[in-house]
Amino acid sequence: MKFGPAPLDEAEGAILAHSQKVGDRMIRKGSLLDADMIAAMRAAGRTEVICAQLEPGDVPEDVAADRLASPLVSPLIARSRAATGRVNLSAEVPGLLRIDTAAIDRLNTIDEALTVGTLPDYAVVARKDLVATIKVVPLSVPGKVLTVAEALVRQGGSPIVLHPFQHLKVGLVVTELPGLKDSVTDKTIAVTDQRVTALTGTLLPPVRCHHDEESVAQALDRLLADGADLLLVIGASAVVDRRDVGPAGIVRAGGEILHFGMPVDPGNLICLGRLHDKPALVLPGCARSPVLNGIDYVLSRLFAGVKVTPTDIMRMGVGGLLSETETRPLPREKAPSTERSGAAPRSAPSIAAVVMAAGRSRRMAPHNKLLVADKAGKPMIARVVDNVLSSNARPIMVVTGHQAEQVEHSLGGRPVRYVHAADYAEGLSASLKAGIAAVPEDCAAAIVCLGDMPLVTGRMIDRLISMYNPDAGRLIVQPTFRGKQGNPMLWDRRFFPEILAISGDSGARFLVGKHAEVVVEVEMADDAVLRDFDTTESLATLPPRMRPEGIP
Image (cartoon, rainbow, N blue to C red; front, side, top):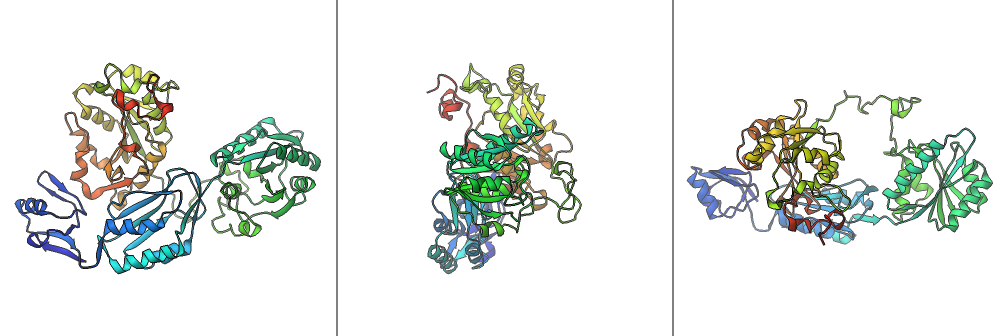
């Protein structure tokens, strides 16, 4: 590949290296320069352009990314189309991700042009979570390099494997002693239920019993009879030995103890056992808390059908320090927050959310699309705001205009700030400017969310926020799906003056072309970022539980 400035007379068919604004037209990086583009540049007074000219055997970035992604895809792993030299892989079902680290390392060391980044080995993923990204760094790759990489992956099989979670029935034994508050036991059961449900399992009705071996053994037998696939015991008093009450109860019921303790903190005092071929665990006291601890490492593997041996547990030490030790014996919730590196703590920039809810909903007249309720009685705007509330964006400004009182009433006291756009009838820009003007001075940026896009989740918003990085020049963040640009969009504060100067019935999207060099596009796993619901017909395409009554 030849890279650098080339005369326009020699640039046709080359790949544009940097986005170019030519008159009213934006020619984006990666475009294959055709005669019309060359003519537009020449008319603008340009004589040369920085581009990449392919040589025999070179493979363009998107083709190379597509070819490398193909052998990396494995069952239950979905892939995006290639765009800007990138292909994303995502999970089709919840499960446990296994990564062959050595194989990924070998792949990444073939040539600097080819990169594969993944989540850590044993990562727990939800459906549609991004698990890996294939990125071709330059605009093309020598064909011989790509062939070697493809052969390496095909020879060993994909190093990216997803083990789906099994829908296990879980039995829980909770022992009690005099003086133990019922509220403590209730919280323990609730937290365990949350853990099991998150792993797609079902918690059977818990059995409470006295804190002695025989009672624990009887409770375990009862849960096995109820069909438990996995048994958990948590004692009123923390287990301190493999012969303590909990482990002894498993042995008395006919089971065995395989291992006691683990190099994960919190979680050191876990006990791994087996009862009639069913895993049986005695949980450490920290399992009463929803905070990540050693039990989560073990449960995720068991739900994924991955065998857990004593050796497996003993190899969990690297990365097993989940909390600071120098603050002990302070309770964790009272311990000061410090960074492990010893550097001064840095707070993440505050990102506000501006929810657009001022429009007149003319395409759905006489109805207001934002107030149309689903089958559960929740208005569309309430569902959108709840999604934003589940994200890290704060504060949340809801811009009202048309039927402002009804919109505020539908949100029922949710912790948001209302900004009334008095001139909302003048068009979208009036509402957008009202929201942007209300963003607090201490916010570094704002993410603008549309009130008629209820399928955009808090997780999606957080992913956009995570890609914002002023130091790296990522100042505008835009979601895409299969290359199509969507919403919501995140804007750095430095663009607020330009947004406040917009007029008419248009948003700020045109600024993306003007500032193409600081835009980062985030490919999403589904089309939620493209779907707004502003007509009666579009409501019929909502998921069934979200459709208004009367929509089939």
